[in-house]
Structure formats: structure tokens, C-alpha cells
Length: 114
Image (cartoon, rainbow, N blue to C red; front, side, top):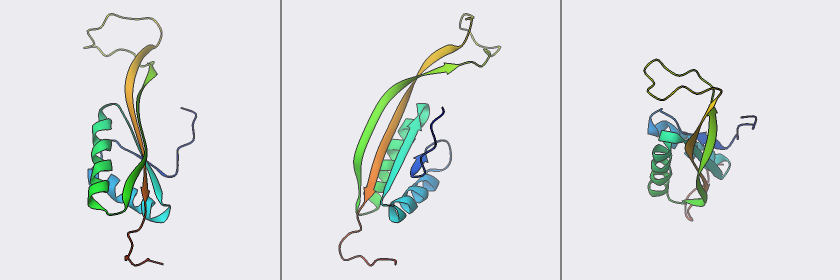
């Protein structure tokens, strides 16, 4: 991946959900938007984080949401317990991806922290 990491993105992996929730809410309050991104088995955790933020904090909503599949090359050697037939060269695999852009509008009547 030669792309630069997005400074307003939260990449979901195996950390506790509250860590992603706190970081995303910090981005939303400072910048106004946050991008929640995940691949593979972490897609369901990303969707959970998005819905936690929407239901927990007034003013958070989804601006844009995408799901899809990417093809990745896996050039690691096969494990000893791998039952698949041997292949020559890198193997490719399909991996699901999820990306949601959240926006935050401070509810009317709330005090500004500035």
C-alpha cells in the first residue's frame, strides 16, 4: 500500500472498542469529520463502533458509507498445517473492506468548548 494514511481516519483492529470510540469522538470534535475504516474480520467491529457513536452522541451522523472487496496478494510462504495445494508465486485472496465517514454537528443549546 503506497497510499498515505489519512490523518482523520480510525483504522479498526483488535484493540478495545472504547479506544476507537474515544479517538473517533476526539476527531469529530476537533475536525468535524472522522473516517472509520476496516478490513476482513474487523468489518463487524467497525460497524459496531459507527453505531455506538451515532447512538451515544447527539449530532453524530453518517455522511458516506462504502463496503466492498479488494484482492490482496499474499506472498508469505504457506504454513506447515496448510491443507491447500501448493502454488507457485504469490497467492491472491479476496478481503472485505468497510469505510464510513462520520460528521459531527454540535447540538443546538450545547456550550462550545472554546
